[in-house]
Image 1 (cartoon, rainbow, N blue to C red):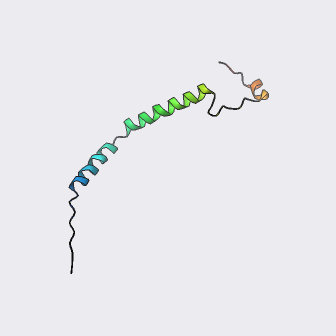
Image 2: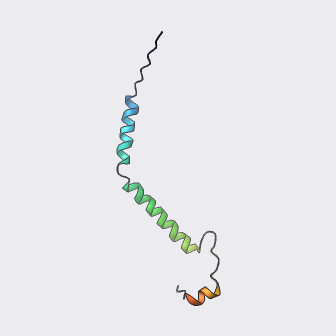
Length: 68
């Protein structure tokens, strides 16, 4: 005895097409990610690191002048 199962997946197919269309241009998403990363890096530098960075050795400070 054979059985036949028929799925009506038209709605699923349409949704997948819609999602695929949105994935073609990732520029807006990538721009948002770039903004978030830039803000995070700037915040880390302003805070002196998270966790706080260790101070430079005296020998390094003598070679590299630090300007604020």
